Image 1 (cartoon, chains in turn blue, red):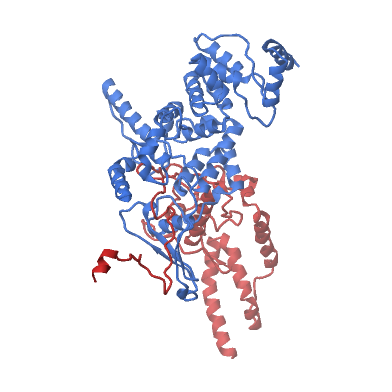
Image 2: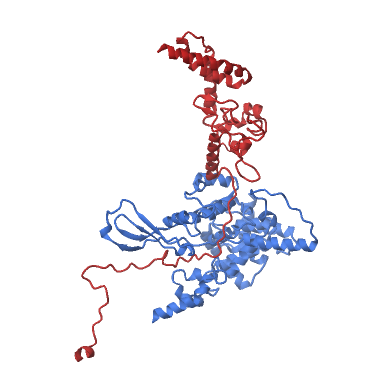
Length: 384
Length: 232
């Protein structure tokens, strides 16, 4: 009876589960059992659940930060060359054409999924001792029905000792590539993903190519995909080459990674240096959304801060995890510089930027120093 | 035994004279043909013919030396003065012209320029220069054979490269792209309609079925109702 009810619930909700675009937050929450949709609905309110990558406010912020530079999105690529087409257009036609181009660009800039690493498959279906030693090689049985998604395709392996088990993820990927080859995917992993080659490619500033190739070659929840993306984002963050990914589909993923790692300060500074004040503000609001228990988020909620005040609070209160020393007031300096370039009225009081020798400094601050003396110390250090 | 050898030597002499005439026209190959002649020299000497093999041992060393010079680092040759003097800023294949009958060239270039020790007349741009070595790390050279607008490797009918070297070139280009030395266009991948929840039985975890053992019942035994049995 309970099973019937659950099955009925599943079938009623099936269109909602498969319709990925409209109800993105569902399948992330109830990953394993689609029957518990009712339970997840109750807990998916914004304040209690941690915001996921696929939530619409998060996606809106990330698309806004990515920007839409049509010149970069539609830059010439190496393809079959046709004679150029020249069109004479009125202003109205030009506007229409630009609008269509923007629509196409938004499609191209759709972010690839950010998923947790997939759990290994190690299910044994049956053990038949009678088949032990019958064959010297493992047999793999793949269901090659055309119209089923690859994630619902049954692939089982009969081992030489008679065990019938489900194929592991690597075997699955390999076999699906054999029977349903994907364009651009190779059977052997390209040597580009080896460490030395990756380092060389990063020095040539070809991070976007690496990420595109990673998307083509690996599944989004495989370990190699996650490792390659992490390595790329780390390298970008180390050298501050954020602009390479701006107006590409990977910028959102990078921003999300930095926000979850709480290392957004260099990105904010880079945005301010390029006069993207709104982007910086939205990035900070995303940070506060994802880390609601951080000090800057709590202060922002209590003060109902918005705009540049958010940035100031971030600079004041957010401890920064840096290995190589701390930057002295980098964020406030950048704010000042951006303010002088734009016409936004900014409070020009000296700001205190906290060191990354964090917890100790904070405890010391609570005990001894007042904000004024700390600022004096900062100024002294800057002058020496 | 001697008579057939004498006959062969006569035939060789008959062939050699027109060959020697064409030697005058086709200078670069003359060295190679003279080496060939020298190799058949000892046989002819036995029969009392003169050979032209006096200067050959010296000539044999210099091509080998050149190969040794850039064998480990073929990319250095493209920076050297020798290369710039010979090719300038153009491609290695820019000044090469195939020799063929008629106006339309054959759709395939020759199979190979070098067969054993013998080099053909008018060898292709890669075979004619010993220092031009196709290697997957020799990116500058590989890029000369790739169209900068389409990203494809040029057809051998355009560059004049022999089929064997074209195959080697294709392999080197693929290896370079694999290593990430040569950039190439990557197709765009969409992730729209895919469900990544991994909840399906094919990829999710399913409980192991109970193993059937002989003697054990494979069905659930339902004992009969007491009222039914009492009627019997």
